Length: 138
Figure 1 (cartoon, rainbow, N blue to C red):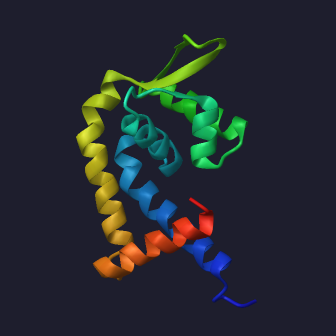
Figure 2: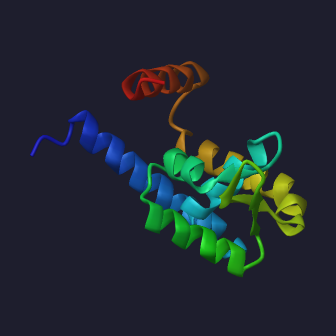
């Protein structure tokens, strides 16, 4: 197997990110995927999202996303509210507890990223971002 294949290297980098993230997030009792949900909600202007928006953001299946939401709701970090635009649907929003942790969560995220990209200089980080976006078509 050729270990220099792009797909293999991206997967290894992703696994390393998850490993480092899960370790850093352990004090908060959440996983890297659950952290990503909270970050997504916190970056939205109204702090709300549909489940399908979260599925697309995570590139995860519906059952996986629901499992993360259920856990986050159980530990008091998100809540489900009625969607005024769709009576059948719910919106997910962060709780006051999460809003009070926003600065701390941002700092943890910045530290994780700094640790994982410490071997890259600023220009290389910018190039990496541009290349990954191009690869993903975004």
